[in-house]
Image 1 (spheres, helix red, strand yellow):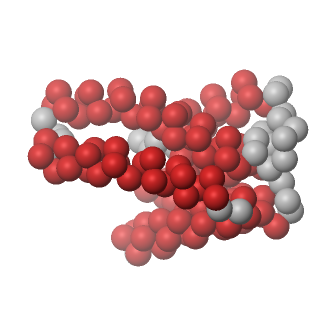
Image 2: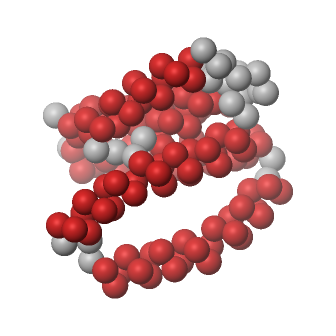
Length: 148
């Protein structure tokens, strides 16, 4: 059941990302009243399915909260990092994380992140938006293939 809820959220995120690009949504006018309620709802649903929530957080930040794409990407990285810390502590203490492969992933991320940031600042916003759509779509296909 959790897999279907996760997949539904993923598809909604994909649709939201796609239409935010088509409609030109993502300008500098931020919907502040929704900043209280939407993240709380996303936190509850993400907690139910055990996901970090970035796949649904990004489209919501773009379409509902109307946060610009570059701010959305940076904010979602910070939000997912903070929410992941608790999960990592729990998994490490339970012995569910293989230490050596994890260290290699961390090292690769630390090396690659500055390059990705520099590349992102030079890419057109619409290209970033559609890149996110492709990434979320590929994730949906992967999950569908494992569910079916």
